[in-house]
Image (tube, rainbow, N blue to C red; front, side, top):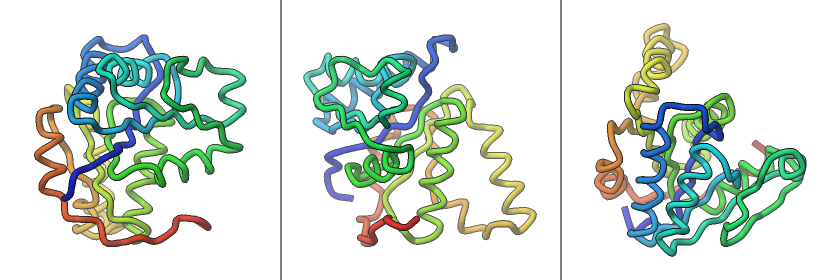
Length: 194
């Protein structure tokens, strides 16, 4: 795959988590800054979201946050982002994050992260895009999700090849090699209407 200029990172906004998750988010941010890869994320200033954004910014990288107005009103938006894009809805947020990104990286998170990850995989299954989707399985966090995917395939609610819609990584050192191995995206389908 050609040089990736922007990666969307999906991750949690909780600080009350195992420090290994926060440390991984910081390492991801440092990696993106070193590689001059723009961070696209949900715009929050706390939890893994805040940690990854802080690390990119501390490394003189570029950070674009995308947040719906109602969340900006009730959550703490990251104050140092390069740009904060405020949109009208969660659906618009997902579309904007998709449009700005060359690839997607999933770190541990809660319901919102799970929602974003499953949706971007579903869009890929439906041939709405063919951008890389990488899941960093920090300390086995995503093992229950991966077992569910196996069950979905075993019970024929998805095809065996649908297990290849994303790549599972065990650590951040595998991110750049996985991106280098990813085929060049060829689908340029607009996601409007999904």
